[in-house]
Amino acid sequence: MQTGPRADVGAIVLAGGRSSRFGGDKLAVEVDGSPLLRHALDAARAVAAHVVLVGPAPADLPAGVVVTREEPAYAGPFAAVVAGLDALDERATSVLVLAGDLVDPAPLLPRLLAVLDGSDAKGRTVEAAVALDSEARRQPLLAAYRVDALVGGVSGVDAYHRAAYDLLDGLHVVEVEDLGRHSRDVDVPADLP
Image (cartoon, rainbow, N blue to C red; front, side, top):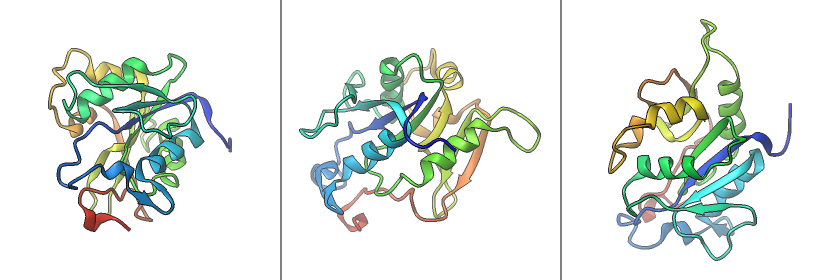
């Protein structure tokens, strides 16, 4: 099994929300010694050679991370993923999509990529491997996608304020159970570890 970033894998980390339910910039809050956003960025950089941050760049942005923004700003996660795809390196054939407020996504990313690289029980190509949270809900913002399938699914769609779940429309999706709460995100201060 390969360790380190894969040249054929990109990642889009979403960090452009308002944090209105949190009451301040939740992505800058320290969690286990580093800003919350760094958890998603570092997890992505560990497995993906091409990382795009959609949202404002933090002061401690790691080298090599490309920054872009959805237009207009605050147009929602679907629009942010579309902007991230536009900025993604063309060598990426698979892309991880991660919300910037995930506490500990790193252990799930290799599993998502392994499922995406395979086929399902009927031998069909997997177009999206999506994490299931602790309540068995699909998490399209913690998922791995085939770039060509995702681009095909979002092309020509009005992305403005479209739900993140719509990213999965028309794709052959395989669900990946989260056995360790790695899909945990932060919406309100009580969600912090």
